[in-house]
Length: 265
Image: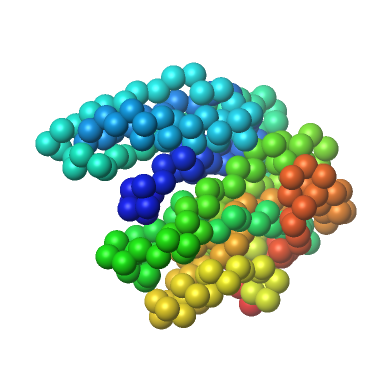
C-alpha cells in the first residue's frame, strides 16, 4: 500500500522473496528457485517491470533462480493503479541435515541478526499509527519501504561449520510467536530487553501509537530479523562467520533456559 502511495515499486519484490527464502533456511534448506504472481487492476508495463526488478534483485541476494512468473489483469475487480504480489520458493536440504532442536539445552546461546527496519510485518498498524494513507510523509515512507533483509548466504555459511540448533525468522507475531517455533519443549529463550538493539523507528511507533511494550514485541521484529541458537562453545565462531559474510552487526541476544516460550526480562 505504501509502495503504491509513493509510486515506488522497485523494492517490494525484494520483500516478497525475503519472506519466502528466510523461512526455508530455518529448516537448513538452500533456496533453489522462486516464482512470482502479480495481480493488478491494469497492466502498466513500466510498473510491472519495476516490481519484477525487485523480485530479480531478491533472487540475486538469495542466490536462487527466478524461473518464471504470472501476471493477471483484473479490471473491475481491482482499482487500476493497485496490485497484489505473491510468490514462493523451493529449497533443498539433505534429510540428515534438516535442522533439529533435539539437542537444545539450557546454556545454548541465541544470536541476533539485525533487521533493516520494519521488514514486511505490522504495516496495517504502521499505516494507522502514522496516518500514512491520508498524509504520507515522503522521507518517512521511504524509510518504511526499506526492503526485508535476506539472510540466506550468511546463515548457510554458518550451517557449514557450526552446530545450529534452531533458527527463527522474526516476522508477524514478533518475538513471542516466532522464536518459540525453533525451541525444544522444555526450553525457553531468555532475553534481556536492554540487550535488544532496537532502532529509534520502533520507539517512535510505540510512543506515537501508544502501543504497549508487549504488543510491540508481539507485532514487530524490534530490530532483530532472525535468531540462531548455537552451543555456547561455538557462539564466537558463529559470530566470526556472520561478521565475515555480510552480517557485521550480528550479536549475542540471549540464552536458552529451562521453561517455555520467551522470557523478556
